[in-house]
Length: 289
Image 1: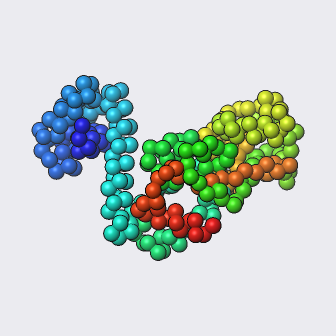
Image 2: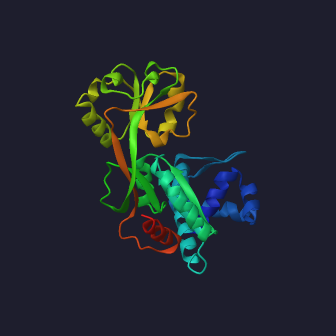
Image 3: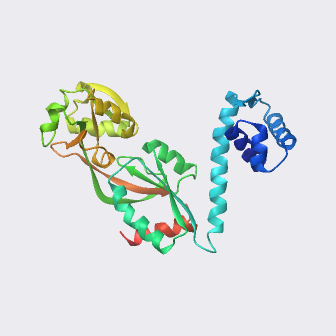
């Protein structure tokens, strides 16, 4: 299977029309139709439901996901080798919305000032999804909240600590308090992280009473539940760095007492050579530690 055929396929998916896709690709419509037919024959499946607007079959949806991953990785490889003559390109960083990102921002800005042709691609998702994209080579670095298994990665542990607390509507009864105790948490519906390692840390903090909490919902990233918190339906257990950009007039954050805080790491694939723009950036970050 040729990479060119996958790029053609993604263009057809995006345009939902063979004729428009052919115009975008600057090839003839019969040529593109033949390429798509050959791709289906090679895979032994039907990729499109043909009509006025092309729709994908289940097999087509699967291929779209894989084609996006493959083409993104190939683009990244090509760019890394092009960067050697004149440092430029994209540094892909994944994060889940952490206070530690604020410490990384000045280093990103300083590096960009030195190498103005460098730009950053930021990917926000849960720690598991960030790790998955690190493993696939689609991210150069991942900013990950501990505790997390970093056996497959090299990393720098960052100095900032992520303080846990309760995010709630400004009119919530607990919003008047300066901090939130264990007993406070038992009296309100809660939204909490779906990461088992995080739940274990909270259970230790609670004194093994995690099962007594009224868990309304779980989340992978806190932005998913902002509307629930804003409505007053439930309050969310989260780290402070994940909510800094929320409207403080509508939602407030109160730290847990006694304090519960965790560290985070900047991780990258183990044994990956410090090559290209990502390698240069890593050298820069290490020099600033």
